[in-house]
Amino acid sequence: MKPLIAALALVLAAASGAQAECYADWKAKQDAPLRLAYGVSQVSDGACGSRKAAAGELAPRLAQDGWTLLNILSTFGPEGLGERQASAGEFFLRY
Image (cartoon, rainbow, N blue to C red; front, side):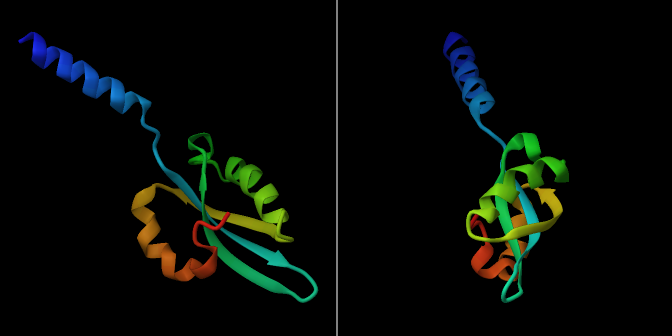
């Protein structure tokens, strides 16, 4: 019985250290010439469920390459990645 309890405790400890995956899909633009982009990026667990928090994380990342974040469309878990990959193209998990 003790080995079973020890194994269960080990599994629970490992699971509590795991982080959930959170992603946001977004639209951004570049000027001169005008370019529009749709992309998907990973955000922190704290930004999951909050478009404002996700925007706060992604705007500086995009700005490093001259992009201006227009809006966050949604935040979601790993289950939404597959359906967005083709649409995001080169901007899938780039930022």
